[in-house]
Length: 229
Image (tube, rainbow, N blue to C red; front, side):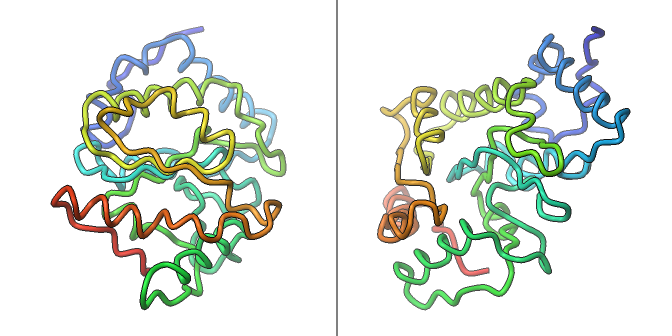
């Protein structure tokens, strides 16, 4: 399998520099081949190509203040946009995001529940909305979890841990909590909770992560996230 020329990868400059060596690895060539094979079979891959690296393009490495880790892109047409938990305006708000909004309404004074699920405004303020897998096949949750993306996003987490300080990692659910092993807990903050999925009932409500995040940012002299969108 031919290696990828890293210079041909289109990615926000600071991330491309930090992750440059990953693009010439065998596993990344495997990712590309898996995407090409899916296309050749006539399968739909989400999100669209222009949005696969949307989280990185919206939130350069130097601007990351918070990491919200998801597992997999949404796998229905029109939902995935390359930002964890986020959907484009006009798309029905997914159940997990509805629970996230409930926690925000409970804990953030003056928060008004949005009528859409586009979280780009968070990303633009330094919240890296990172999924562990960056693509998925239509209607098949987890279908690209083993093609190499998780190795890549593990490197992303390790890069943030190594090169930045005082980042707040929000790890929701058992899958996300496993990523704590990649993070230097002497340099960063890790907040854990159950996944916001309704399958967990209302257990996510009351975690206080959004208020705690802004408190930690203010303590560090950073601008807090305006969670209202």
